[in-house]
Each structure stands twice: as C-alpha cells, then as structure tokens.
Figure (spheres, one colour):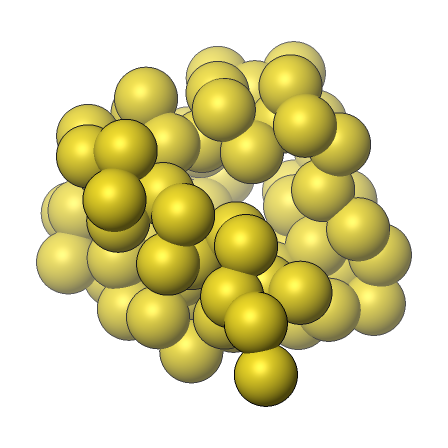
Length: 69
C-alpha cells in the first residue's frame, strides 16, 4: 500500500511540477494525479522512475511505496 501523504509531500518538496514529473514518467498529468490520489496503482517501473526523479533513498522509497498498515 502506498503512503500517499508521504509521497505527495515528497513531490511538493521536490520543487517539480506534477506535469513535469508526469511527462518525465511518460504518463499523462491525469494518470499521475490518479496514482498520487490512490485512484489507480503505480506499476513497479513507475514507482522506481518516480523515486529516481524525486531522489528518494531506498529506505524512503520503501516508506512511500511499500507502506504497511
């Protein structure tokens, strides 16, 4: 399960616009928004690509994308 709050915070502090991140991930802005809002799921490759764009450490990536409730 994704920790949407943590992930969205990382997106905000990155300084990147969501449209830039979507384009860099080869997604539409709507597709990325739906993933960040939990309306659709990230593929593993998308999670990895976003982690690289945001500069997440492996530990932070795990906290964002493999959050266990």
